[in-house]
Length: 144
Image (cartoon, rainbow, N blue to C red):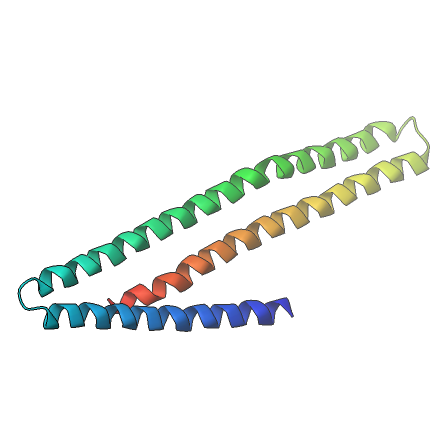
C-alpha cells in the first residue's frame, strides 16, 4: 500500500513539475515577445530567478540529507555499541555463568542487531525520499 502511495506521489510530482516548467517557459516567451523594449531583459531575469530557486532548493535538500545523517549517527552508534557489548558479555559469561544467562545475553544482542538494521533502513529510506523529491522537482526546470 505504501509503495502505491509513493508511486502516485512521484507521478503527481513529475507531472506537476512538467506543467510548471512549461508554464515558466510560456511566461518567459510571452514577456520576451510582448513587452517591446525591456522584454528580453525581463525574460532573462525570469530565467535567472528560476535558476536561483533551483539552486536554493537543491541546497536545502542537501542540507536535509546531512541533517538526517547527523540525527541518525548517534542512535546507530549506540545500537552498534550495545550489540557488541551484549555479544561480548555473552562470550565472557559463557565459561562461568549458566547457559540460560548466556542465551539471554545473545538474544538481547540479536535484538539490538535487528534494531540497528531497522534504524539504518529507515535512515536510508529517508535519504532516498529526500533525493526523490529533489529529482522530481528538478525535472520541471529542464523545460526552461
